[in-house]
Amino acid sequence: MSTLTPLYTAHAVSKGGRGGTVKSDDGLIDFALTVPKAMGGDGATGTNPEQLFAAGYSACFAGALAMVARLTGATTGPFTIGADVTFNKEGEGFSISTRLTGTFPELERSKAEALMQQAHQACPYSKATRGNMPVELVVA
Image (cartoon, rainbow, N blue to C red; front, top):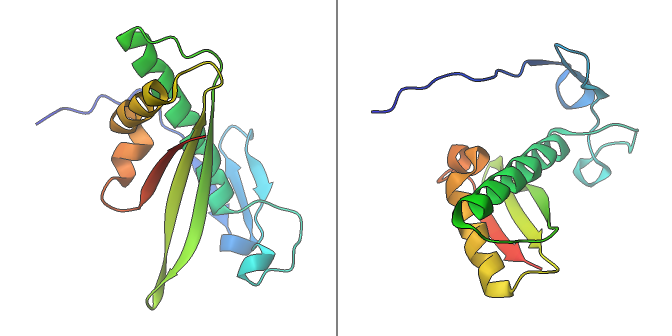
């Protein structure tokens, strides 16, 4: 059994749910939340939990991929990781799924695909969601 050694804890508070606000304790995140039109919202300016999750997952995955590349000696050139987080109706409830898309203009497709798979094993977001949420890995 491994022992957790906390390195950093983020703290945010949401008030009012999907139509409220979310704010981090340091004030760097301070957003109005709105329900997207596709989900019956009024289109008001604001973000939503899926956008915030997509931003965090894409950044974490990109960091994991850079680490894996460094550890394996791979040269990636510039790359981007996009995250599409989809809110789904599932039976009587709801779920989310994610597509992570890597764009590697200077890297051979098979090497990019291998790095995406390795990053998916290393990324903390991938570890946290494994078995709980479908995640599709795509190389553009």
